[in-house]
Image (tube, rainbow, N blue to C red):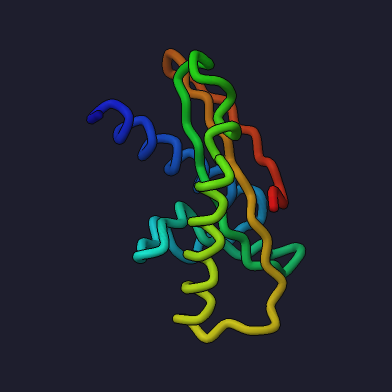
Length: 119
């Protein structure tokens, strides 16, 4: 369990660095509420959208590609968490989208795949 948590944290750090270098402003990380968790909340500086990002990190493909772990159930929890975040922060009339950032970490190297607008 500790390894999974550690690799997840590494993946989120790498995802944040990637996003910041690609015109995103990180607003919040690991927003947690009863409805679920949002890994990264960022603002796309170019498209002026609020982006909710699910990060999936893997060290191999034994259990499939990372994005496959964003199941219908996970998507449902993510939608509820997003609705709560928008309500709590009084955000209206702002374009939003949901992305997945896949991070593959192997032997000190990594690859990132940014999948935009999954829902």
